[in-house]
Image (cartoon, rainbow, N blue to C red; front, side, top):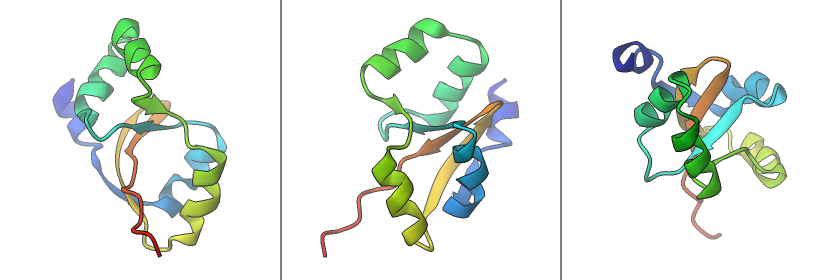
Length: 98
């Protein structure tokens, strides 16, 4: 399963995620989690692992502030992994203060 998931792992621009965000399918994955590990757990319906990550704040949905800020960053990229019907993404690092 990991090899199949790895084929969908890649970098995408924010514009590639808009449609997925509109259908509430984008899940932000904390930097300290491996996208493939999370993808495997989700694909295997490992509810205990997924619920633990959600409870720890390591799997979240984009906030309203994210959805306002991201379109303004024209070259914003994410590392993404498709685990249908979801798209897991690595949250971008905070931009440096202006």
